[in-house]
Amino acid sequence: MEYLVKAQDYLKLKIKDTYRLAHSYRVANIGKEIAKKEGLNVEDLMIACLLHDVSYCTPFKTQDEWQNHGRVSSKMVRTFLESIDYPKERIHDICYAIAIHVDLKADFDGEYNAFTLSVQEADNIDRVGAYRLYETLEAAQFSKQSIDVQIKYVDLMLQTLNEYASYECTTKTAQTLWLDRIQFQKNYFERLKDQLKISTAL
Figure 1 (cartoon, rainbow, N blue to C red):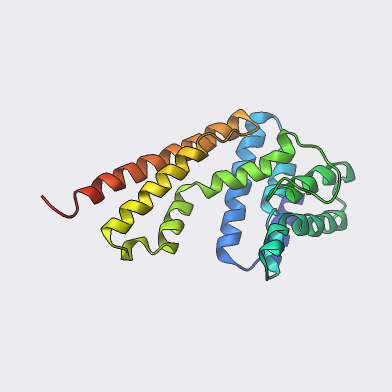
Figure 2 (figure 1 turned 180 degrees about the horizontal axis):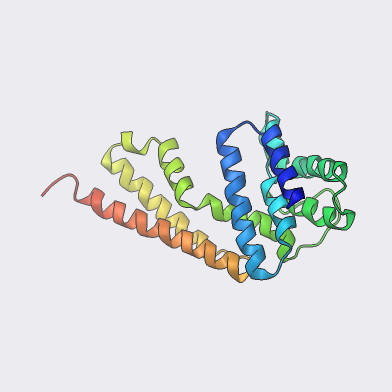
């Protein structure tokens, strides 16, 4: 727990963006649930999840720089963990999990396993949660669109969610969390579409 507190302090020092901090805490809590139920190292996975986006403290000028943010975060986290004398044998998997969380690619050798893949999966699970649903609608200025445009948007979201439902997570716990959130969003958009369809005439 001492190391987790230090990691939390490091995250707060590096990332000032309110959303990114909140997202990182949510991902860490999802990772904690996965680790506990799957018998993974809870502290290690929470640290990896908590710090997976720490490179957001630097600006991304291009899409390639954003694509590389997992590998940049991994380097930053390795330096930090070594500075606090974190057990060397545990640093590798933490950093590998962070490095691959964007596109499953790292710039050093490692192994795909339940631990290293769980950071990406916890990250994805948060992306289909209730807060992200709200944020997505707000970013699309959904409330300002015409009803016809809103219905088309909802249809597109339902199509996307049906595609997401076929995604298979590495662990049973992550799969359950993923499908629960996908179903929640599908239920929401189906009900929203029903309401939109009765919003223009009797």
